[in-house]
Length: 224
Image (cartoon, rainbow, N blue to C red; front, side, top):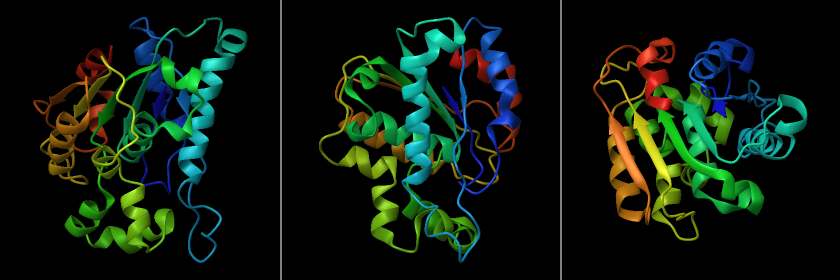
C-alpha cells in the first residue's frame, strides 16, 4: 500500500499511479491510497489529525479484506510504503496497534519510509516556516498533538507493535531540500533501541531532491 506525501494539505492518489505501475511491473500488486487533506484556515477544525490517519487505515483494511473481490488476489502479507507525510502515516499505523483491526495488523510485515517526517516537533524546530504553512492546519498548534502524531515519539513509548521479524526500511536523500536527513537518522536510532525484533535498515546513498526519488527505478527495486 503506497501513501503519498504533500504536507497533509496537497496532492492526491491519482498523481502517483506511476508508483503502482512501477511496483506491479516488479510483481508486487499495489494499492495507491488517498486520504482527505486538511483545508485552509479557518475551516480546518474538522480536517486535522487523526483524520488523515483514519483514512489510510481504512484503505489498508480494505486491502486486507476486499482485495480478493476487487483486485483478484488474497494478500498474505502487506507492506506499507509512505513518502514524506505519507511516511508519518504509515509509521503510526505500524507502531500503534489501535488504528487497525487485529487480523489486518497481523498481515502488516514491513514499512518503507521514504524521506519521511517522523518527528513533527523536530521538523517545526528545523523549519519554522512550516508551522504556519501546514503544521497548524494539519495538527493544530498544540505541541502535545505534534508529539502524539510523531512516529518517533510513538516508538519511544509503550504499547507499540513489536512483531518479531518486522522489516522497516528508511530511505533518505542527503540532498533533500524539504526534509532534513536527521528525521531519518534519529528515527533509525529510536527504532533500533525500541523496536524489539525488528529488522531496521537505512538507505542514504541516493541523491536528488525531495520528490525526484519517487520516479527512480533504484527506489522501486529497493521496495521490491
